[in-house]
Amino acid sequence: MSAPDAADLDLGRALALGAVQGPTELLPISSSAHIALVPWLFAWGWSGADPEARKSFEVALHAGTAAALLVGQRDVLASELAAFDSRRAGVVALSFLPPAVVGYGLERQIERRLGGPRSIAAGLALGAVAMLLADRRPQDRGRGDAMPADGLALGLAQAAALVPGVSRNGATLTAARIRRFTREHSNLLSRTVALPVIVGASLLKGVRLRRRGVAPGLRRAMVAGVGASFASTLASQRLIRMVERDRALWPYAAYRVGLAALVAVRLNRGQTNGARER
Image (cartoon, rainbow, N blue to C red):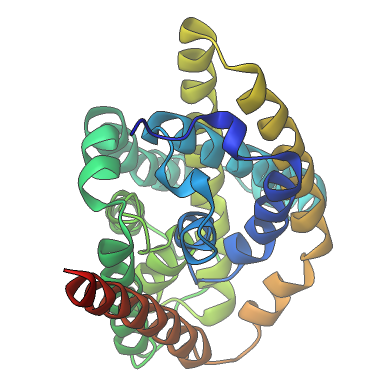
């Protein structure tokens, strides 16, 4: 039986995934995991569709998020740009290089081998453990303390976050807190280094889509998803302040572990039912 095509993601489901994208991108709980797991948990045909189509739709949702952040966080971004210098340029460049190299060369292999529910659950759980360990580190570095070595650490974290379930936000927050940045400045660093990667990935995927063309069904789903992602991200702006406040990461880690456990239960139930049918 052939894989479902783009038509299996109707406009209602595309809007639902766009609505999920905003808050899950702003919290360290992995938006990519949720975009993959929601169709799987609810048995949508889309979960078994062409991997390239699913990845294109996911990148489109990230583009909607990036656009919303550029609008909603414009004052913060303007403040950062006003203080931009060669040191900060080095931090941003080194944070961009690892995910750009890994994403360009290994994106398809990662998606093919690690994009299933079992791998996503593992990424959620391992990321949760890393977050808990990082949160125990002293946090005494603040604005203006970031150096190129910190940028490289954040870049490696973003490269690791290409594995579904790890979470770009969660990985960069973890890296920043390991590097002893305060919770507020860890979140600021996380968002600052994420935007260039999201924009770059969106542009690259846009060029690839233009070359090979987009099925009408996928095009409609992408437009709906981008609009919903943009709106849900703007509506979720307060979540940024919630993470920035002096709070531990354990609630997000607990949620990640709970979601991973739900996936494990569903997988085990499916294996049990399959064995009984045989």
